[in-house]
Length: 201
Image 1 (cartoon, rainbow, N blue to C red):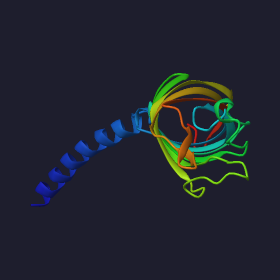
Image 2: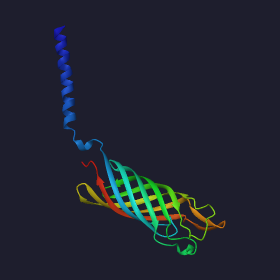
Image 3: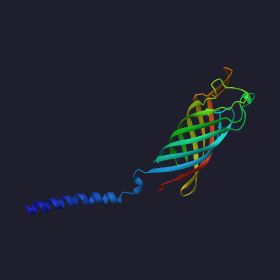
Image 4: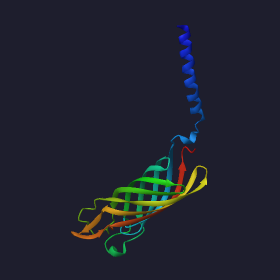
């Protein structure tokens, strides 16, 4: 019996040691890596408010190999009055939006599908009263994003992107039961900003 125990031990060690050696020789890069990223950008939007709008955007991203999932918060402010509604809408229209994007990365280029929702407050001149009492209007959009990244230092990238959205839920303003403004069917967004990799390779 003691001989059988020794034989079993030798066989077990002979199987375990090569497996351990192969695991040790496997390069770390072959293992899936999840990388977190934080980004801040400035965006210029058309079609979401009565006039072109600008604002900041903050983004958190989980990246795995060549794919990523990100959530983003945007605050937009109109640059002025919309030309088609200059006599009705004031220049203080704003929007608060949340965005979720799923992206594919190929070297320095990325393509995403994005879903955006939030609230829009279209400013109305003080001497006019909106039919809905000035309540916030919901907006829902869906679209595509394409962009490119340029490394600045090891952990930091400069990125620019262009988005095209179909506006599925279009906010509007009614005054005296007459519709004075409604968001466009399509919207365009241009952005540029910096992204920081939290746990770089």
